Length: 115
Length: 113
Image 1 (cartoon, chains in turn brown, cyan):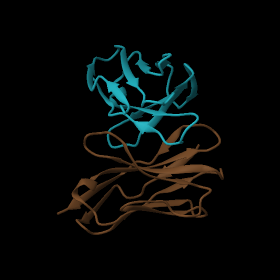
Image 2: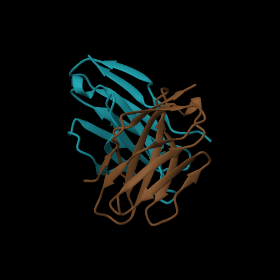
Image 3: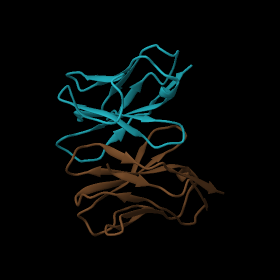
Image 4: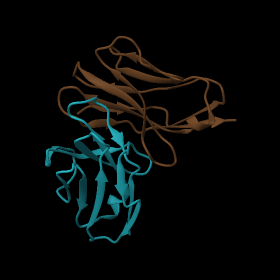
């Protein structure tokens, strides 16, 4: 089974600064998708950004961007110009493009934004 | 455009009881997946339904069962509740023919006493 590892249980960043959240995954597959989800205290998981493994170009969504290193099986999330509303749990997730729609999640990183 | 909805929001049950949680998928989606999220953990996949059948299942006992209705809504049933079943239960919907991401509902917080 695929595993997703987030080695930073907690991170903090000053408002307006940049922070990078780490994620590594283990898979023998070559075709898959990777995601970052945000879960604020309201509990609703919100999709932040997604990356297709076959694409070499790193995905970007406004202030959010990823550094996808396929050979290293690494998928980090960079948040630029951090805002108070970015404070939340962030989960990295993996989905196979071959063996089904099951998502595998990491254990999450709690991000605090300091005013 | 209505997103994924779940009911109830919170639920308190006693050990040994049975519980049913409900989910309505996002408009245009035909696939529903259920996840269990224990406190401080990431979501764990329970199972997935489309075309009214269970298509994929995670490592959960048979006490966990589900159903999907013709309108694509879904139920999660848990029998013989254990204290360890206390968790946030998330429903996620997706489309088999559309984009590959899943959209999540707000969850149901189940407490077993």
